[in-house]
Image 1: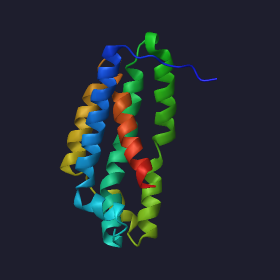
Image 2 (image 1 turned 30 degrees about the horizontal axis):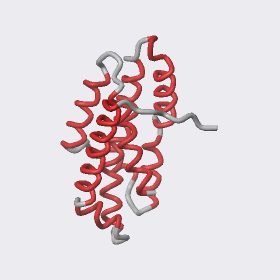
Image 3 (image 1 turned 90 degrees about the vertical axis):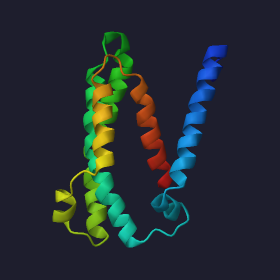
Image 4 (image 1 turned 90 degrees about the horizontal axis):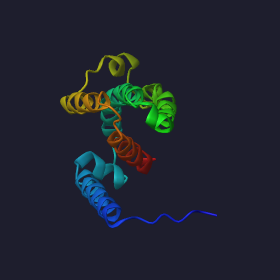
Length: 155
């Protein structure tokens, strides 16, 4: 039997604010041309290859900031630290799946391996590594959920 959670007014306000941020983000993301084509089933092979090229670096860096955030939780958050460590372990080689897909879509392994991070990936990674280095970066659990949630929606 599931335990019913009762939120305080502050908790309700926080949850509503987070939901609004998520919905605004999802709406803004759905207006990006490549995402729009993806959601409409009109993604070209070239679009897919570009997506994989840009996504690969984010995935590589993702396991780094997730691992860093795990190491920043103190023992009062050991249950969260364990969960984040497990997630980092699951993620750390996901870039290889993107490489395999890229080659299967007609791309060359050497191209995907040598493609540099785009400026957006650089900025995102810099910010996330900074936050991950702070004590008990609980807010990054939200970042993991948003990033993973959006990817899951595409599959």
